[in-house]
Length: 330
Image (cartoon, rainbow, N blue to C red; front, side, top):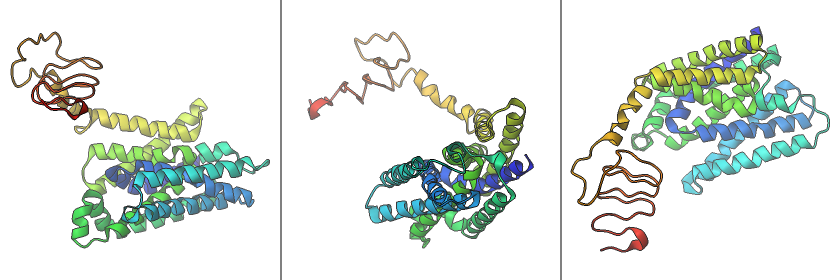
């Protein structure tokens, strides 16, 4: 349990520093792909007969190669980023499954690779994770101004002389290293949760990047403690319990934060608005809001409904100057 707690703290530091950039840049899919492609590297290490440390290092190599492969495929617009991520994700994850399925005897269970084995972490594992975390922290702190500028406004950063392409590739590598650190804690499947969930909670509580990193790290640490206690007293899987604790804290942040639920609910007032003008002649308004196949006599429309006014969606036509179906006007 002591080693598991230390592992959780180490992962929280790495994920907290990198996860905020994942949230700000919308790179959750990239994090998910990198987390899953680690299985290929771990599988190669298993085939070679490696132990836990070699498995972690193999996962790290696969993760970094995934990040570099995505960058190579997307340079100068050869492929869209999501397309390149999907290719690397599917290919390397499938390779890992094939390699593992060929092995009749394994010195580590597939379940440990998928959902982690934090309670089985050794001191050697902790040393490897700590070394990777130190590398991540040094790189983030060394290039923090450039990473911040690129994350918030890459176009202006490029005009200002920041090597945006290099920073983007570096960020992908940092995501890969952070997911490798989380690999031993919660496995392939849940590594993304430790990268994104605490950072999402922090983004709801502050807009300052450094404070966001600190809060994200603290959320990860608290989630580790809560998850470990829950797994110990209620006989639950430790890794998934930690992730569920992190999700619960994010939900609480969303409910209590001024940028969360309290700011979302008032923004829905336009649905209850009476509209800027009177309803058109001949229209009998029987309800203020409707979804599905119904119309809103006012400002919005969903599904197959018409907006009584200026715009038409779905299979509906514009009430006025233009008929939207088949490109006809009149």
